[in-house]
Image 1 (cartoon, rainbow, N blue to C red):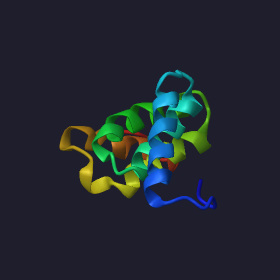
Image 2 (image 1 turned 120 degrees about the horizontal axis):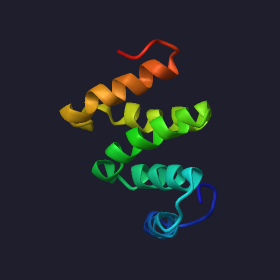
Image 3 (image 1 turned 120 degrees about the vertical axis):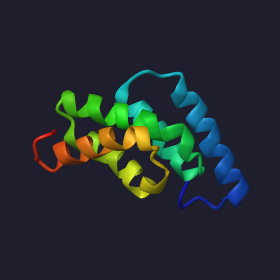
Length: 102
């Protein structure tokens, strides 16, 4: 979609439709793609809690790359991370950086 000759409205519509399709799938990669699409659509509130949970789940599975992608979504929108989720977000970042979690 990035290099296609589409109007911004059509690009946004394709992203929204793709996120709807991915929402019906339960695998981790589909969930991650969906969160990335939602972030591009500006739907920050919809992705913050899911990104933390998904990042932790991916890290538990040994998928550090996927966990970093999830954490990056949070890092880009750190100002919107609710106070109640901030500790979990910081713990995920620390684990990814190789530090011990508190």
